[in-house]
Image (cartoon, rainbow, N blue to C red):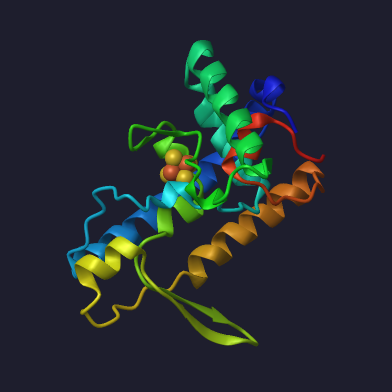
Length: 199
Ligand code: SF4
């Protein structure tokens, strides 16, 4: 996949992207509601989650990010593209002792350049959560480092990611069925932006 022909793609996929937008709104609302109950506020930290090498697994999120990229001017897109290439090369270099110290190419002075178009994990990371798997059962995930500092003493407030994951998975499934796209997806933001994936 390549961002060079992104406009044609995103116009064609627009109805799916709108549906993803509604799912993301719901994720943001649920997250904000729970974070508010804790009194947790993300103010940015040294261990920024934007340095985490998250992998993203849906094509629909890939095209949504592309939609955001299209809203930028060509100069900014070029800058982001070159940052993405640099991040990739840092990760691939044996001279990078700690790949988790490399910042996401979209993070500029602590702010996400494509905040409204960031993928699911960027939206849900931070507060403790649970996942309820039909066969494996319930798994609890911890909050981030900053959450532990601010709210580590507080009791767990239920935040079930399961229905949110399910909605995204259902959308991805119908998107793939209707478009016929069968490509495997496991990419970092840098890989998405650098346009050097397997198709
Ligand atoms: S996409 Fe945005 S929120 Fe997500 S890691 Fe990159 S800069 Fe951070």
